[in-house]
Amino acid sequence: MPRAIVYTDTITSKENPMPKKFTLTLLFLFLAVPQLAITLSAQTVTLSTLLDEMIDRDALTRFPEPAYVCVQASSYDRASKSPDEPGWFANNDTAQFIREETNAGRKEWVLMDAEGPGAIVRWWITAPHYRTTVRIYLDGSDTPAIEANIGDLIGGDYLAGAPLSAEKARGRNLYLPIPYAKHCKVTVDNMQAQGNLYYQINYRTYAKGANVQSFTLANFNSLKEKVDNVQKELLRKNVQYDVDRPRSSSRTVIRTGGTPHPLPDFAPVVRSQNGAVRTSIWIKVDAEGEELAQALRSTVISIKFDDKETVWCPLGDGSVCQLGAEILSGNGRKQVESPKNQWRRMIKSV
Image (cartoon, rainbow, N blue to C red):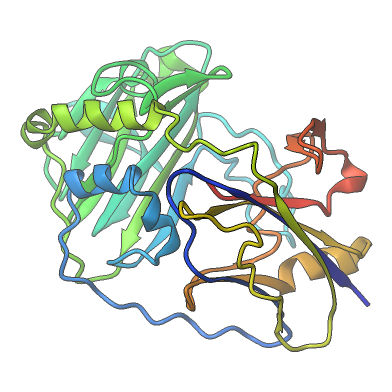
């Protein structure tokens, strides 16, 4: 029978005190999970509010309002359709699109086509060169709200600079939010000259009825000072851990039994006037083969801050480490995770 071993570590912090109470619960699921109720908020989502959210660390401990789901459009190989069909492991993940169409006499390839309300929050692309123009059409307009060389927009300085727009590890990234009220379509042209293009576009889809103000260049230009301030704040290392103060750790072993298993409240052992920060949670699932795969899917992490649940996620989906990725060991040294240690999962809070 699988079991879970949980390790936690706490260190005091000069800024951003931890909530008074932090509870982590492991749920071993054997029944279908009911859908979460969605509550709409009267707050209007705008470029300005999304920028504020990027530097609001307190927001990490609360469910967002209005609620949304995260979706991704990508260049994944369209031959990969189902585990029961041939081609499930197809890996030609470049220059794959939703469709081709003609706009204003141009042949364009559609990367993303999503109903609103929503917001693009992340781009990643890579290619040998960037010879295509990307166009972002919002709310059914035939005129793109943004039109630029794809390498200038994503990873370049067309709208923003680092860290919102930067090239890292041969990939180009853009984190400038692009909200839309009704609809968003993203296209590229000149694919004959471009050739390869790997891409991921991550976007939010808000619940129907949520108030979202669509992106415009005029509004963006009026917020350039805020964009600059957000970039500076993201680059500022303003959370300073007090390394002279002791850490506190805990270790708990839980066996499966078909019912939720709440761990002891992780109120920090070391508490100061400035509070404390949960720096890491390590979870080891002691299982192998199909039992491991099932355990990673049916073991759910539930985290509450001050008795309000803000995290609910299957253990396998909540992992931020992948095979071969560098992870931090218990003594703070970097190591490479090997396939035989694939059960190790680390959740870091900053």
